[in-house]
Image (cartoon, protein in one colour):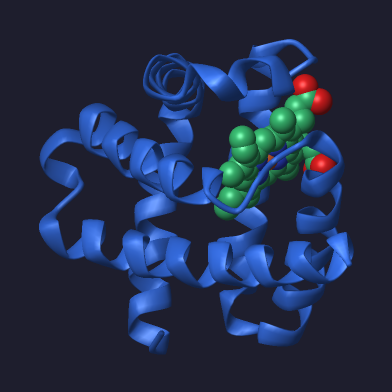
Length: 138
Ligand code: HEM
């Protein structure tokens, strides 16, 4: 991703921050509708989970410019996810639901360009997490 792309993602994230509770609420409602099988993996209160998700996205977006920090953060996050029961196939559905939620909550602010950029960023993140989970499972 180019520095300009990262700036755009950071700007877009900034637009989402005031709506983070709504984003988290809609994200989980939609995720459990389209993938009910993952519901039992989530043990804690969902409102706190939503906050954690948004905070981790913030950290990821901020560290896109420091790939080494990012990869070590994602690798640890991925290993914890293996223990939560997350499987490689779940990453695609989570990515789809995330983009759906951003579109739904942000409306016209979530331009086609931003949708592509978020899709690309999620691709980088989920590829790294899936690879790290495969190593953890060995
Ligand atoms: C980019 C992708 C993802 C990010 C950034 C992310 C982020 C997080 C964060 C920050 C936590 C809080 C606990 C911790 O830090 O270890 C968490 C917990 C969790 N995540 Fe994810 N996650 C992602 C993908 C997924 C996927 C694909 C699944 C599969 C269903 C999943 C299922 C879970 C579960 C089950 C928990 C624990 C919830 C609980 O203890 O109740 N996550 N996630």
